[in-house]
Image (cartoon, rainbow, N blue to C red; front, side):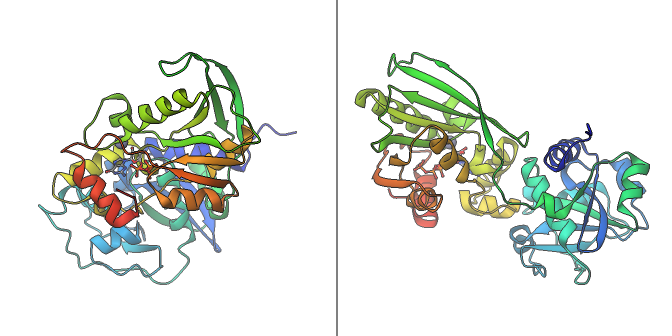
Length: 359
Ligand SMILES: Nc1nc2c(ncn2[C@@H]2O[C@H](COP(=O)(O)OP(=O)(O)OP(=O)(O)O)[C@@H](O)[C@H]2O)c(=O)[nH]1
Ligand SMILES: [Zn+2]
């Protein structure tokens, strides 16, 4: 018996470390490296990197914005100039000042050696809801480095694993709602220490029949604040109202804020939208894909609740396809057209043009 953290727990610890600015040690592809999140790098730690072979790893989307070829396919490794200061690192990772102070280079891309620790580092920064960029410094001996500096050590393979973490039911309790007295809230907690997700069950839906279902992605601004930039709040309330009217349904409230990039990054995207970029372009400039959500979570929660067939409330045909690819049967797509206003008309039009949403 050992009380040491297992692989999953190490990854959870690594996410927390990176959020605080503490580096982690990643091994993989026969190499080992110290990995720092660019967003939380401190001046003192950057000073320690002078004279090393540090690189900054950026995603293909951020590379495209900076007009450098993504030599490793999904990422690029750029040499950290010896005189690079924190402002340089942050400007490489964060597009906030791209227009005012374009990062022109010349950049020197590293093309030899393994990009595995870099890829793992980027995956961890995304999972930590930070900007997807990291500083990577090769070290000769990963184990010794981790021990000497008291750092979390993990393999790139474990950080890049794609198996869905088990979601454990924690508790469910009766929750009378405006839309129905017969409401019930279920809490699910993933094994990997990531965000919990919720299911609101209305009535007692027949598990043998398709259930009216909504997979709602958290939107603090729309759901809670009444933001007019999106249609999430009215969609949330509209879906619940329809379930109440039908007497049965299930709404999953998935904590995948900002299509999976987190609230801070979503606000960065909003700030870019104020510079004239649309919702998809803003995600790309930040280094993200259009949609970073993992739809397997929703499918798994529905299964856990005993549902295999759904009438899905959505305007997003990709969501239907993704749920079906996760093994659920979508018997019907039920449109959810509420909440259009003069502020979100452009947002909805972009989703229709670029993400296949139906207007
Ligand atoms: N990254 C990013 N996320 C946004 C933006 N506006 C809203 N969101 C998030 O988008 C998610 C909602 O997803 P949508 O793309 O609006 O809709 P959908 O879930 O794909 O489709 P529907 O089922 O029709 O609502 C929520 O997590 C919001 O926080 C934005 O401009 N940028
Ligand atoms: Zn929203």
